[in-house]
Figure 1: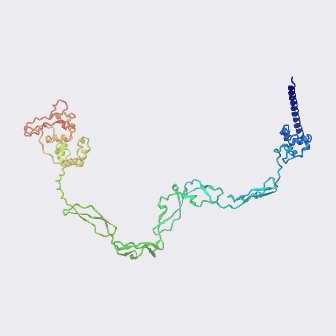
Figure 2 (figure 1 turned 90 degrees about the vertical axis):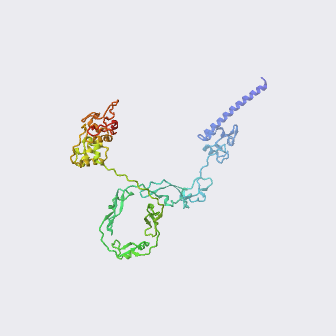
Figure 3 (figure 1 turned 135 degrees about the vertical axis):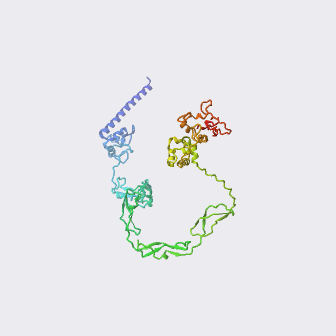
Amino acid sequence: MSSRKFLVILLAVVFVIGAVGSAGAVSSYVTSFNSTYPGSGTSSFGCSICHTSAPTRNAYGAAWASAGHNYRTIESQDSDGDGATNIIEINAGTNPGSATSKPAPTPVACTGYTYSAWSACGANGQQTRTVTGSTPAGCSGTPSTAAVLTQACTPAPVACTYTYSAWSACGTNGQQTRTVTANTPAGCTGTPSTPAVLTQACTPPPVACTDYTYSAWSACGSNGQQTRTVTGSTPVGCSGTPSTPAVLTQACTPAPVACTGYTYSAWSACGTNGQQTRTVTGSTPVGCSGTPSTPAVLTQACTPAPVACTYTYSAWSDCGTNGLQTRTVLSSSPAGCTGTPVLTGVCNYVPPAPDPTPTPTPTIDGTTLYMQNCAACHGSLERSQVRGENASEIKEEIEDADEMNYLSFLTDAEIQAIADVLATTTTPPPAPPVPSDGIHPYGWDKLHPDYVDRNGMSACKTCHGQDLRGGTGPSCFSCHSDDDDDGDHDGKYRDDDDDDDDDHYGKRDGKHDSKRYGNREVRRHRR
């Protein structure tokens, strides 16, 4: 091994031994500090109690080394110069070797104070000031008297701005209210100066009154009435009045008192009759009866001012042959006016067209109506079983009997005419010629076509059957032919008379009296 290499190894060993010895020395110093000051919080600072950085000592470590490593010897010193002795710092748990670590100073009560000026008076009626200085310097504490920092005062008034609640429901008194829910600025004073801000009129929902209380009846008036008033109603605030007038007014008998004096209204305007009037507006004593005994007191003559009339006219009359038409005054206004109405006007006369020939009112012949509608069943008028009876009863029987309903087409006057002629026919009839066939009454040949045309076949079926071939009476086809091919019995009447005219009736001359009808279709009678 070379000498140089050996030297390096030797120095390393020496360094390690020195470091180990130094560390052991430091650890023993800390142990010595803790045993000297057991329980002190300073021990938590470790090596920094004596060193700024190992192995350099701070002021406390240097003083300790100089004192022969005796901590007690340097207790009264202020090694770090922070104003606290080493022992004070060790007792306080701070580092005596560091000026930045020192114990809190011991509080000293203040014995005197200086103050700021009083603040402005607040809305709460208080003003304040603060402590600006105290003696001795660095003392601690506050003034023990509250009045030193706060006192009562009279604030300058500050008008409020208000916030309101919603309006209440409308009361029965017609009012609704609201309240102040907030005001600004804080501490302001005052109340709303306008009552309407807190109260306003409203229309309450109507509540009908259910009962009333009344005042006593008044004295009987000169009009023979006495009254009383409603003094209360339920429920409170309801609306309405008693529905019975007698509840508030009743008749009475006043004691008559003659009037001794009168007061009058002003004279009215002069009327068109040259008179003006005034009325009694009051009399004494109150409630007296009577009127002024002198008419001139209420009426006097005057000269009316002329007033032109406005007229309302009737319609113009038809134009006369003189080219004039007229009208009349229906009314004029104002009352009592004067003037000349225009009653005549020029017009263009047009001669009227000649009146048409009046249509004669048809007369109702009861005899003809009977022969047309009744004789088929009841025989001629003179042979009717109801002739000479009461006309009203005959008419009622025609209208009500079911077998007569085929006469419903007749008017009431026509039925009355038949009833009247039956009621007035009382003479027994002469013996009529007997028809050759002996089926229908005398004259039937002339009436038969018109009767069927007017009444239809339903009346025939009453006697001749529904098929016209005989019911209670003979078959219609004993006179009428039914020789068509369709079997509906609407063939033509026989025309077997040998007269020369076209009426198809046989002559009643002793040779041709069959009364057979010719060439008329039965279908025409079926309705």
